Amino acid sequence: MSTVNTQLKLGQKLNEGKTKQIFELADEPGHVLVQSKDQITAGNAARKDQMEGKAAIANRTTSCVFKLLQEAGIKTAFVRQQSEKAFVAAHCEMIPIEWVCRRVATGSFLKRNPGVKEGYRFSPLKMEMFFKDDANNDPQWSEEQLLETKLSLAGLTIGRCEVDIMNRSTVAIFEILERAWATQNCTLVDMKIEFGVNVSTKEIVLADVIDNDSWRLWPAGDRSQQKDKQVYRDLKEVTPEAMQMVKRNFEWVSESVKRLLEPLASGRVVVLMGSISDLAHCEKIRKACGSYGIPCDLRVTSAHKGPDETLRIKAEYEGDGVPTVFVAVAGRSNGLGPVMSGNTVYPVINCPPITPDWGAQDIWSSLRMPSGLGCSTVLSPEAAAQFAAQIFGLSDHLVWSKLRASMLNTWVSLKQADKKLQACSL
Image (tube, rainbow, N blue to C red; front, side, top):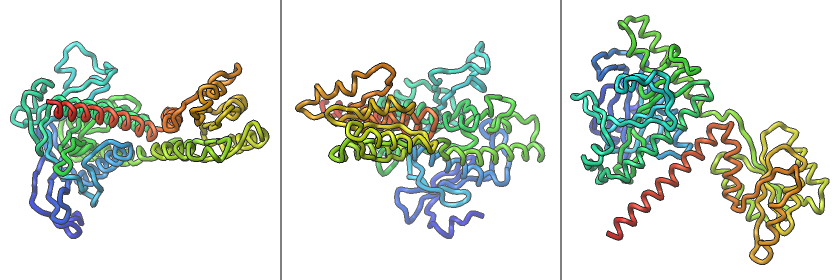
C-alpha cells in the first residue's frame, strides 16, 4: 500500500481512468494527487490485466520524464513525486486531445496510410491529433475540427493561438526526449501526450503522464527489441511468463529513464578579461552560462601586458581534460582573443565591451584576424554564453534541452503577446 494517505489529506476523487486515479488535495488548493494503478490495458481496454508493481514503475518513469522536461524549461503540471505510486500535480482542466508525434512510421499510421513502408522517417516530425472519445475509439481529428469545436477549459477558449502552442510544444517535447533517449542508444519512435489548462494560472501546460504506455522505444533502432507497451499489445495470449517479460521491459525503461537526468559530458566556459574594469560585462556572461547549467570561471589577464601569464592560464585549463570554451573580453585593442585563438584548439569567442566613443574602430581588432585564427565575435554577453552552450549542446543533451525549451518559450511568448495586442485593438 502507498503511504500517501497518512501524509496527505485527500479530498474528493476527481477522476478515475484505466490506469490512474486523481484526488483533490485538501491542504494544497490548486493541486491534485495522481495515483497510478497496477493495471495494463490495450485496444481501448479490450484487453486488460493486473500487473503487480506497474503503478510504482509507471510513477517512477513519469516523475523522471517530467523532471527532465521541467529542468529543461518546459511548462508542466508536475510538482513532485509524493510516494512510490503517486505524484502531486497542478490541478488542470484537461484538453480532450491526444497529441501524437512520430519520427518513424509504424503502428496505426501504416494502416491509415497504405503504401508507406514501416521505418519511413519523418523529418520534420509528423504530428497527428486524436479526440479522446472511448465510445468511438478516439477518432483522428484535424486542426479545423479542433478549432470549430471552440472548447473552453478553465475559462480559456481553445483557438488558433492555443492550438499552435500545443503543436509547437509537442514537437519540442518530443525532440528533447528523443535526444535524451539517444544517449542510451534508444530510438524514440513515436509518442502521445496531453495538455491541460492550469486552473490557477490559466496557462496551457503539459499534463497527464508520460510513461511506458506513452511511447514506442526501440533500442538500437531495432523494432524486435522494443521495450514499450507494444510488447503487451502484440501478445498472442496473456500467460504469466508473457506478463513477466512485459514487466521486465517496463522495469528496464524505469531504470534507464533515471540515466536521462545525468549529464554525459560536462564542459565549462572560461572568461578571460583584459582588465578588472570589465567585470560587470563578464558577470553577465557567467549568469547566462548558469541558466544553461554550465560552470563558468572568470580570470583577469592581458595578452598585451602579460602574454606569458595568458598562455600559462590557457595551459592550466587545457591540462585537465575538461571540454572548455574560452571567451575573451578585452576593450580597446583586443589582443586577448587572437592570441588565445592562435595558441589553442579549443573554441574562442570574442565578446568585447564596446564603448560609444571608439567602439566602431576597436571592433576591427576582434573581426579582422591573421590567417589560421578561427575565433568568432559575439557582441552581446548573453549571446556569447548562448553560443558556448550551443557548442556544448552538440554532446550534452541536458544543455541542448535547455536551448530547445528556451527557443520554444520565446516563440510562445511572442505568440501570446500578439494575441493580447489583437484583443486590445479590437
